[in-house]
Image (cartoon, rainbow, N blue to C red; front, side):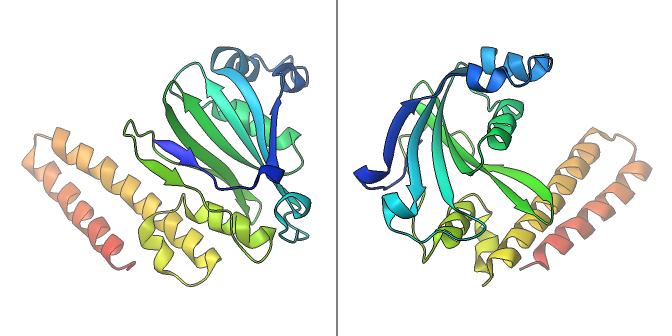
Length: 211
């Protein structure tokens, strides 16, 4: 999969960012430093999405959105490292991850003091994934970007906060269903498998009721 972000040349930065800019801040946190060393090949500040570069008004919440391209040494997102980048940079960051010929993307979203990281699945196809940069202001631009990472079933909701909430509910129930399905598959005794199946059916029913 290739990540496509349609932006004017005025938003292009294309600036190399040294990993030491981040690692020198937490030399004692060896697990984070190891991720920068063993997982990340290169960090490029690719684009700056701001009032001056794309002519979209900033808001109190979102002043700028940066696009960082992270070239990886292995096909695995280094969550601890990018969390530190996200803390260190005072603006919202859209991460684009590149491993060989494949790409994926991710972004942090904070709601009610709880931060989550959304990312797309790795896809080895030649398909192109468009991440939109549109909105009446940078807050709505940010929300539209986040929506590209949400479950499509959640996008039927009208308001952004409701879309995020439904996405989390879907994700939570589907994880519970997966756990129960694994337990049912492994369980050999009928008397123990029966209540597991009943619980599984209830979870599947609750998932359907969300829509």
